[in-house]
Image (cartoon, rainbow, N blue to C red):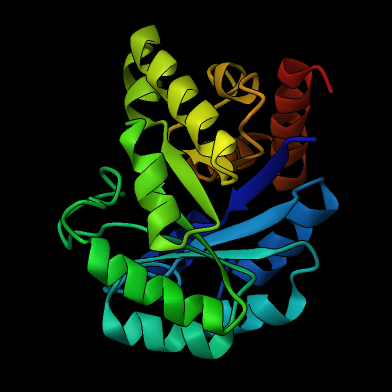
Amino acid sequence: MIRLGVNIDHVATIREARKVAYPEPVEAALIAESAGADGITVHLRVDRRHIKERDVTLLKEVVKTHLNVECSLDKGIQDFINQVKPHWVCLVPERPEEITTEGGLDLKKFFSEVKSAIERLKSNNIKVTIFVEPDVEMASLALDAGADAIEINTGKFADTGDFELLKDIEKLARKASSLGLEVHAGHGLHLRNVGYIASIHEIVELNIGHAIISRAVMVGLFEAVREMKEVMLLARGE
């Protein structure tokens, strides 16, 4: 059955807009799990613009499904992650001026750094995925780096609706799965486009945040998670 990882970064974004103690990301995680989320995702950025170390530490204690932390190769971040030991880490590129993650990690350019980070993470029993562009070459590079999974960037498809990009996503998903890697996907997915990605059977997990938190403003977080999961399962025929 396809899994839904709910990214709760933007609960913390609302909190940080006023620099107050609410809304609480931990409470959001519990609601999301009760509504059917199969995992909780957060991005601990170098600038700490939303999620903080205290959030990750608390979430590791209370999340009953699995906690997935997106992070860069920054040494300080990696030191902290290896201490807290979330269930999964997703390695992503990061630029200070970006609004959100803009693309996949360049495995050709940063292969040695990625491999070294993965070796350390896995020595602490942390499973590792790498956020990559829908380029079939990324599958073998991720495998050689020691990753357990890849997460395919669906952002360009989500923004354009270009079905040639969907074909590229499908090709990478099939290749990675054939190599024994788990295949995850995410970025820019919402109720109107998630079905196209969920219907790719090699993809076992989708990580979705902004669309769910935005929808939650209108219908509540429980319902926003529930309806996203329902659309995913319908598209998958599950």
